[in-house]
Each structure stands twice: as C-alpha cells, then as structure tokens.
Image 1 (cartoon, rainbow, N blue to C red):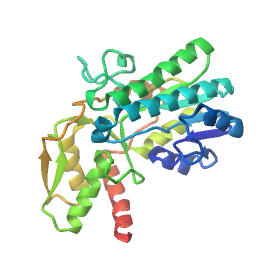
Image 2: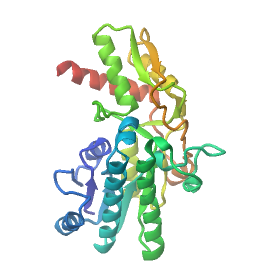
Image 3: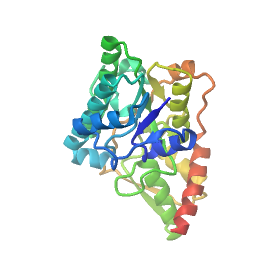
Length: 303
C-alpha cells in the first residue's frame, strides 16, 4: 500500500517516520495544500492508496487569537481539497487528524464523547481553528454517507514529544520543558507560566499516537474515535509533575493570570479507542516527560 503523509515534517509526522519508513512524507516545501491546482498535481504525481492528513496551521492561544482568519482559511482549504481530491483519485484510505479543540467549550457532562461534537461551539480562544477542524469531521462523515468511502478521523488530546516547537509559538509542554531547562542553566529560582494553572488537560506522548495511526492502517480499523490517556490533570499538576520529572522541584511556579487560560476542560472519552484497539496503553505522563526532557536537554546542551 502506497501511503502519503501530509505534514510529514511536523510533530506527528516525525514520529510516524520512525515506525512507517516506507511512506512518503510531504511538507509545505513539496506542495501548497491550500491550492486546488497543487493538490490535484500531488495526487497525479504520487498516486497514493492511502493518505494520512497531518498538515495544518497550528499554534498556541495567543497566535490563534491574533490570526483567526489565517487559522480558519488555511485549515479549511487544506482539509476540503485533500478529501475531495482523494475521492476523485479513488484513494481507498484517508485518515484525517483533528484536535480536541473541535469539541464544545462547555458541556454538562465529561468526558467528551464522539457524539457530543456538535452540542455547542468551540472555545472562543481558538474558535476559528476549532471550527475548521470540526468541518473536516463533517466532510468525512458526509463523504462516507454519500460516496460509501471508508475514510476516518482521529481526535487526539494534547500531544508532546522531542520534535515539538520550542519557539514563540510553542504549546504548553514544550514551552514548560524549555523554561525548566533555562531556569536550571541560569540558576533561576522560578518559572513564569501563563494563565491560572487551573484548566484541565490530557497529554499524550506523540509516539503513542503515531502507533494508533499505524494500527488503524494495518488492522483495517475504519471507525473515527478519540485518542487520549486516562490522565486528566490541571495545568498546575502537570507543571509540578514536570518539575519532579526534570529534577527541578526547587523551582517556584509563578502564574501570570492576566494571560488567557483557554478552554477550562476538554477531556475526551477513550471507550471507542479501547474497543477498537484493546491492547493500546499510553505511556504514563511523568515517565514520558522525563524521557522527553532528558533527550531535549542533551540536545540543548550541545547547541
């Protein structure tokens, strides 16, 4: 089976390359996925049997608030063009990757199940991004119904790993690990985190998510479902867990509550995941953070 992976140089793509080396990994340098002409050319050039669609415009809360139009337009175009051209090219397998940002901002009961996708709007802090990704789910469900395709989407919780972004636009865990490293190097006594520390989050090592994608392809699993861990912790609990994992418990956590928290909670149910892949078990967060930090600190020491 000839597999094409969009967003192949990103966090998930880098992990997939380790366990699916024979797939074709594309980046923005290869094709502009917001262009109908280039997407059509991509399918003509590569003639894939399966597409794993990881590409997208992603970023932190501040960037989402600042550039909502870019987040909506770029993601909506990529998703729409790829699914339609996959169908037109008779691609048999298509796996689209969503985000828990697609779910409603607030619901009456948690965890969020797949059936709760449309019970309310996404959180205001990344409303445009959340809706664009939600539209991918709508499109895939519609194509399966009208065209009898066997396309699916996977909705992962927050992911982290050694190939994360560590700049101005990084997410919480990579930013946290870098702040811990810098504080230790500079002999600082505290680190500053945005928000109140109260929101709840599920975090999964990206390598675990990559394994789920591979298993779906290998075992002909077509159902769409959430992919997450059973650990749902507050930002403050995660930060303190990271301090322990990084041997930095001496550091004080200081919160800038003038900065937005984002969605208070968005923990998802993994009952469908357990039924589809009964043997799957995600790595414990403390162990994953420790292993990730050890790799990154050696990398940063050498730079």
